[in-house]
Image (cartoon, rainbow, N blue to C red):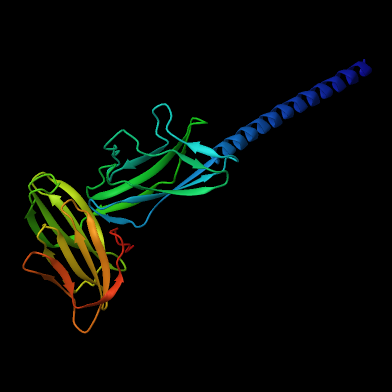
Length: 305
């Protein structure tokens, strides 16, 4: 009888050990399965890395808000980013100060396809101002998404923030549209504004049709010495000429068209006398009293950031 009890006890112990081993195997198997899933998920998430940056935190209403994207290809092979099945490969998610979503002004995507070689990092700049209504004062939160059609998957950047405010108006002039000029409406209002940033002051120009409410352009003409008032003249074609002090003994000249185009931009050094804008009897405007030009760049926005 005692031998029988010992046999039963041994059998129970052996059965318990087998159950425990089986349970441990199941637990280990589940852990390995979860680890594999996490590994492949992480590997999938890391196939495209997206980052988003803005040059500064604060922008003036209607000026270009340029987003700089960095796209890094970690897929181990060349990839082609392109629109597919009505889905744009590049998109933005923008919310306003109260968390409201900001919809694009057009559903059409003008982004050309982008090929990124294996291991390559490319940068891509997008001006948000003509694409989204981000001219109202307030704070905006922005996240960009890249759609990879091969995986039917989105990859997202971190969220970035910028603020829209307005500058201080210091001068304005309304002019008519001359006959034969390709410009809509009947009049334009030129305005100069200044904005103080933490380390400098910038001079801005704004061109708008106040009757229709259309703002054709707002952009910086460069850094400005705060206590120097800019000089302005309107020429025979009703284009705006601006001369302002950009640094000690340095001056910047700009010519702006009726539709907000920056037609000319150059820099001068001061000589014995201070430079000035001179308007002749026939309506031509020129700069007098300067040294040879420091620069005569093609008409592009000054880089003062």
